[in-house]
Length: 412
Image 1: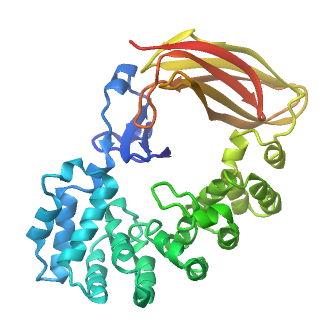
Image 2: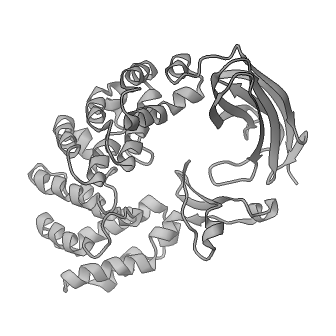
Image 3: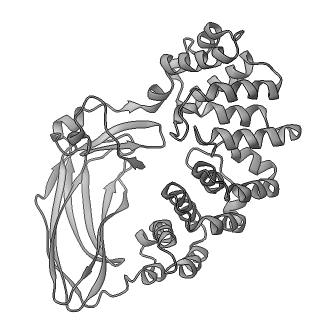
């Protein structure tokens, strides 16, 4: 799940700060955690689908009007009607986006260069620098109609322009698959671009396992071409770019943990921006308790640490409610500590699977004691449905499992 915070419509700024918006791979935009909601209100909350937020009559009409303003013979009414037929409501987000792209191809001139010229003028009606997922059909048009060899320069220039309005990270992937070396050269050039959206495209576009994107099997097997690009972005001044570099490293760590461990040793401790990338890029390895990676970040000592009074507020919890646990941690000498907990969820088949959650990272002084009280939600969300049965919570200190407590999850 990818989580982002921003003010929700029709609520105060103060309340918006307490709201968490979650976007998952199924295309949901949902308010999954509002600290002012009761458990019952949380259970009854219906998420807004991203397909409805981004692809609806108003957004399609706006696109048609932007095109019509620069291409007066554009058949706007036919364009809209052909997109929003009786099957529209059943289409998921990517299918809706692709249908819009197909109809752009149908109602714009069939000459690719001419059509791009019209789209270039139309997209100028949208704000630049605010990447809008609703505009993905602009780079998607390049993916669908611009892969012919004779269109290469036009298509690369178009992707470079459109990614400033709506990311071209998905559209570049077929080009990489067909022309890997040529695209690596292009993306290397993009790493030097003065626009952060273009530099981010250089990293995000070559992620081996980009959510929603075509898998880049070649880079999964050998990520060295990707690492050459990331090397050039490892101290980028833009957090937007650095997040992409870190996510790329995290992708690679899942198939090449030793390679990323060595890279982390080489990169860490030389630049503040790079340090952030390395830490965030190693998050999966940290959650897995990779000893070598934990050592790089100083989370190596557990012998001097002690955890006491680990307990649950209640031995049973209902779906839709919160589970709360507490504990105290103390140390005999100054120690850097990473605290996590794992929840062993009951799956639909009755088996259990674990998910790790971070609590805190801190430096404990000699003989210092610190108390924690943690609440974990069992509200059903689009990315997780909860099933009744015996669950467990395990406390993890510097990658070492400390203690486990069982509790019962029930339905109302």
